[in-house]
Image (tube, rainbow, N blue to C red; front, side):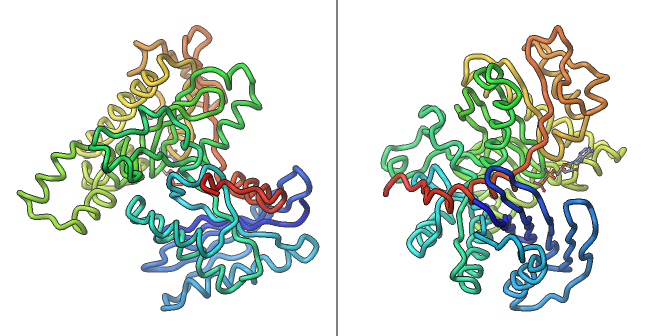
Length: 400
Ligand code: ADP
């Protein structure tokens, strides 16, 4: 395929976009942009791949802002698509349910199906679909491709997928799906590029960012993952609780009188690092603070991450490599040290000098488990999956 592809990642308060030029197998980043603060103080920042600033401005909060934003994106990319016409838009979609194991060209029926999955991703899925619907309205002729965060995990170990609840509910699709699949797809590809041998081994990949999860990976495929039916499960995160006792949820309803909406807000926005510290969901802020509650939040994050890394290893009956990725995993030598120190019993030994330099391999030569940093790139996977669908008419509808 030749031309360009727009990759979109729509959240509840931000909209990130990237423009790629595609020549055959080559994908070159042309522009990256981000609308932030969409519910309060909207701001737009756009840069060329070289770093040259194209826009950096505050916007006025208006009712039809989302539609205006999309029109604005088309204005911004226009000069860059004159010689490389825009072929399609790739949307990051949180949930593809049991039906989608690969990216798919969106049509009305598929959008309707994806709407039914909103309860399995109550914050992300509506924001993702809102931008799909607007794009389809303002550019109906442009192919819109859905790229799913769940797809990478569709074939996890059935014992990891099943919850021990009555069959009448599991039969309806209440199961573990797992997320961050675009990131894990990228990392599985990088592991293969680095070494076929490494890619066949048992790796635990730690995507540690504002949302965090782990993936137990072997032969480039997911075996288990920490997030569950929703992206609320698994590790403690910036603002999300991660896995907690379901009895605690019942007690909060019955004893504390929380409504479903209160609970949702508490578990998605007021828990995790910000809940424990009472200060911030941002790890950098907590690491810089001398408040004991900040230290407690950081220690709990490390404790939660190491416990779950060991659980992922157990799912694969062993572990040969550990990969750190995303904002925390790629940038915080201190967090990597704290996590790896607690894994010494498994045979993890860091090379502190390499770790301090954010090197590609950060384990010591004698370490039984190889530890790497692999910077993730979810957007290039969006662009590649989108090109694949429009290039080959491929689709991932297991029900079709
Ligand atoms: P997202 O893409 O989900 O918004 P990121 O992957 O960018 O999130 O990760 C954001 C998190 O990474 C924040 O908690 C931030 O504090 C943390 N982070 C980024 N750089 C550093 C660093 N140098 N040291 C510690 N934490 C960092």
